[in-house]
Image (cartoon, rainbow, N blue to C red; front, side, top):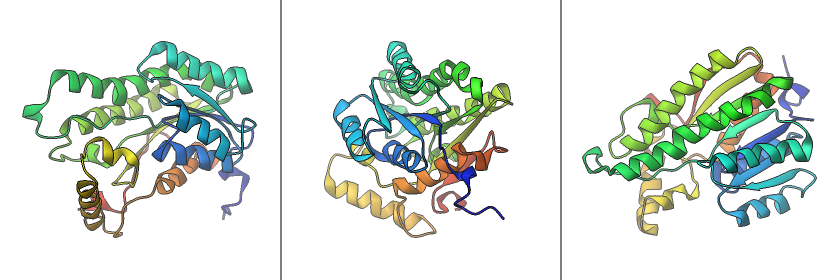
Length: 259
């Protein structure tokens, strides 16, 4: 039996890059990684949440900031360079930055909305993983892509977003084959999780409260997820405790996809 306090569950000496690391799930993952001994580069389009993360997670000794847009090749390069320049290596990449958008029936989908979704939710994490692989291979590392439970079965109103994430699930498993044995690649599919992302596709606090209530009622475990629920799974999959896990698509959804 391996105790949870075992070094296999820790990230001491490792360096991680977490995109979307200033808020929501990405921020919680960064916090869990720092708590497990990692040094973390957090990236995002807005610098203010990133600077707050540095302040709240122990300062520059533990966290570095790389502001940028994951759809920009120049910015992605800067993110990777920050890890190497600051701490000399990269062991873990977490693609947590995402975009919901384009909700509603597919027949109303606009081409520019579709292009924007694909750019953030599929193309950017694929390209960043590709660009990070030479660094990750040096000492053996892992890639973790954050998808969605909606990618696993048809969900009316979220077809475009879920299709982009379903593509991410697929390319992640192909990468798991191609990057082995030096690099592991896994996916987490969260269920309804209480993050600011609800505000990106709902226009009022009343509707946000209503949809959160509905998600909780649809979940066998009876509540919305919390970002720390996803972060706990991310910590496991990124640690040596999961050294024989690659190509996994893990639902962390309170049982929502059982129904």
